[in-house]
Length: 187
Image (cartoon, rainbow, N blue to C red; front, side, top):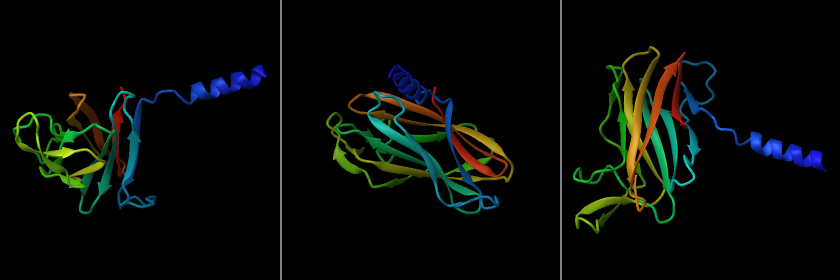
């Protein structure tokens, strides 16, 4: 009986080990081992138990070295955030930002948002704002200016309400040996 308990405890503890990073690959069309080059592959995680939302990141291949970085965000019941479509007067709207691209990427300033956020009057400012209270996908297009391997860092940030905290998540988009990947450090 005790052997069975020890085995069950060992198995449950070993399955809870933390990983250094999570990553997913999108193979480019030039990769002969690609099973479906146009299918976005994502990882989805509740980044911390106290987070009132779930994030999923991905890279979706388009054509001619163009890609979308995709971020799915699912606010928990009662939580919300401001869409990037809100007025620039608001601080803490949802943003995807690439750091120093070294002329490797041309990044669009526009976001695709699906489903569309709901315009409501902000109770604090009295101004209209785009509130997001449901699962929403954001896509931002970028074009790679070279066929060479590369690495670019970036971040996603937004204020989650009613917790009222600025959430920041760094990510790394890179291509190595014809395989496009996105990685989110979990530390």
